[in-house]
Image (cartoon, rainbow, N blue to C red; front, side):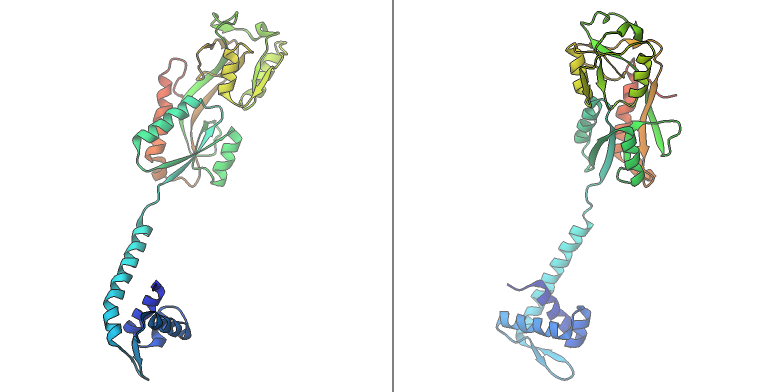
Length: 298
């Protein structure tokens, strides 16, 4: 089997006219090139060059080999160019706030699959601070998260929502539209440990004399909804979370809202912001504002 480098040495000798210049053009020493030519001659069982003090002459075997060697080298070069010019699928490193409804991300993933386009999206879930730290380090391109007034990243606000109670449809208050926090004294409560509003929620109930039993502390909103639906306890969640068997009455004097949108890393340019995968995400989140309990940010 003839290695490619042997053919390159062979063609360099032909093109340069002597072994010294051929070695220089191949970025090897002359002894290395000479050893390669000798190996090629051994493999072929024929001498290829007649050496003289001034130039080298081709033997009949070399003349016959030269045409094949050039075609082989041309094919190698064409293959290398084809691989190098092949554009790798673009990867969007997307951070997703842990308290974003899973149904939204599921719909986005399905939309990506249907759209095609060759873009890859890498999903990274995290809390608000974790996502902003990753954006600052450049390990994320964009994050779907809370957009605050003092945001230090380029931002695109898409949707505003409030927070309300989540309780089982069989709860004694399930038919109420508005519930005062003091009325929940003695009610077991599910703790959503990843909630960005957890300290404010705790203070709200403590100020009203409510010190509940916590039958579960979870980091999954899907699990929280299932436990609420099963009647294990109540919790406070963003308005966008809905599930069969769970009702969402308002909590009196609890006026917190959050703006959701896209934060972009400092390295992200206009071209990346206009990628189809980014625009699809923005459009899908913004479309949620058509739901009666959500709205566009002001």
